[in-house]
Image (tube, rainbow, N blue to C red; front, side, top):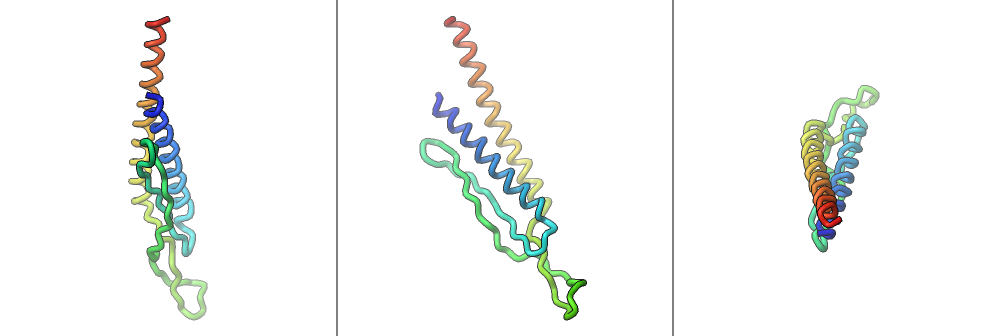
Length: 117
């Protein structure tokens, strides 16, 4: 059962990394030329959860640059705030589910100790 809890702890760490990546995307969403990143959680060895962070190099929207004397366009961030909000909601649910599993495990162990003790 302890290995199961280790899986839940690794999932909590992975969801924390996902949230940090998403928060970084939101914080930089108004930065010109910023490229968002994405954290993908996958199952690793022994049921542990691993995160892989990749940069998404799709181009951001092009807009007129009011500071350009030649009328050049500038590229904005490719971060979509709505997409990040949806991701953060899903991450939050995953985090809460794993904390509930750990809490239930601790309560069960506590009950067993009370019965034995």
